[in-house]
Length: 186
Image (tube, rainbow, N blue to C red):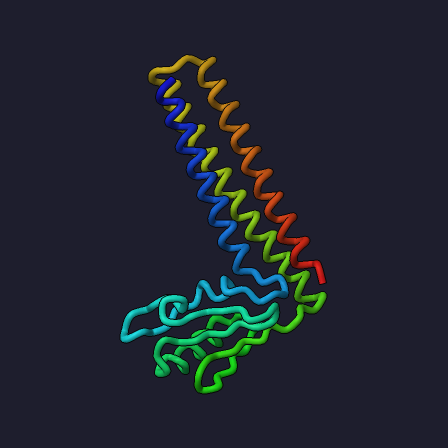
């Protein structure tokens, strides 16, 4: 029984990691409002080291359509501006010599639909990760069945793994529905 619990815990951990990864990915997809997490994946060259934008500047959202970036060193302004352009987020930074302002344009209907497609792709990736965790757990149960546990225990464990899979898949669907509603709300 102890081995089965360990397998279930490992599967739950993998599935939880897939959900957390999905949440991070969905946070990066903009829904028409300015949010500092939109810039989370941007890195700048800071004295030869690839450093996260948030570690070389203050990032604020003064209103729902604007992000302001105040670098700690003025010499970083152009590097930050270039990094944002290279990131291809569909936003244009404006450098005023003191800080960088980014105006977030309202989303068009077509752009909203593309973002929903991107969201669904991220959700499908999370579901694949969850199914892979299920497969690994089931393989582990099969190897235990050959060595130490009975067929009944193996069947019970596989049912438990499937219930876990269904629970985490439902969480993915719930997160996707929330994000889709957020994107499509004008």
